[in-house]
Length: 117
View 1 (cartoon, helix red, strand yellow):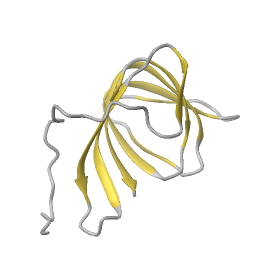
View 2 (tube, helix red, strand yellow):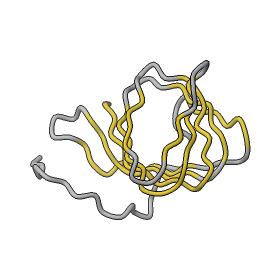
View 3 (cartoon, one colour):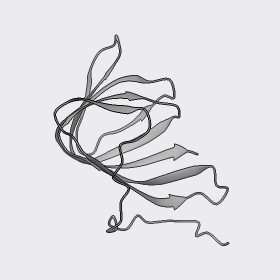
View 4 (tube, one colour):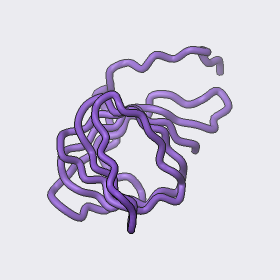
């Protein structure tokens, strides 16, 4: 299988995964999420794509590192026992593999992500 050395994300397709991510539990509101895995690295070690979510709060437990770039929306991320960090469109950040805490989605979110598999 050949891979392009540069991959430009298209608009998300019409067939997202709509199940909540492993380790994510709703704690407030009725948020929903959609995940589009749009690319796998040539070595098969990373996936990247687009994620969307509606307002509400999840408690998230991470098993892997994640790089995120926010396209739309607003999220306040609070590590258990830590200080909240609010992210907006244009912000890029990482979440470490041992993160446990809340993602309070205050405005509908669209983000790009990259995680190891």
